[in-house]
Figure (tube, rainbow, N blue to C red):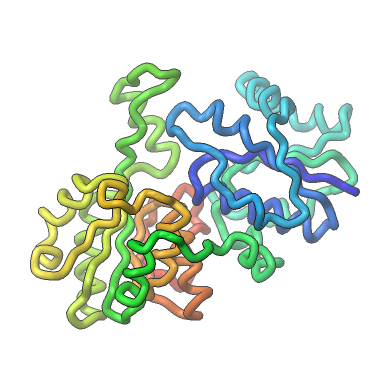
Length: 310
């Protein structure tokens, strides 16, 4: 049986994109998917992430502790492009999507007669559209066990409830355990789309207010302080119901947060793939939703065509 090796990295949102793209290729080519569940997290010094997918839901997939090929490949990339050499002399086909700024349809039609290795972020639903229904069944977040989440389900699914996803990158502070300079931090943040400005949230909230009577805002973020900064700049938030969905308030599980987000019908999302998946699962659940999306995603095909973009 042919095999596809996947380099997994990033937080839960990125991992879902990477798995979905690789799984689509595996289904198309009747291949087994083999996921490296450690290498990408050991070398991710900007963010303390770990393997977050629910392994018991993954079909025809093998989890590999280490794949030394990816470690060697990433090292060699620093000195040049060795992809043609690997393909010609070692019969290895590397699909490296790391620096793509848009969907590349060539990836869907590669030569699977060679050993296949995938590395990148694949941040577009176009990478898994062909087998979307089957893949979404595998990765759709399960109902949480914590009563805090379940108690909110009915409230957040009402037509006037709005999910706001705020991302500030305050967790990018160290590399190799050492504090990095502001210049280095800015460079890393720019590589992943930058920080969505507070002006985006203020403008998006004003647009959403025109669509919804008496809106209630549920704001997801890593810290309460991030949300307070947005409230300080929004007259609408000061006048309406606002609830903080953060780890500080007991909402710390990424998968459970994703399930809760999927219950909303209205979204304002920054350039976070986790928030993207919340809005995307909602679209699949209700068939239609209202989404205002930041244009800061590195891949211009990340936000769906029908979503409003600022």
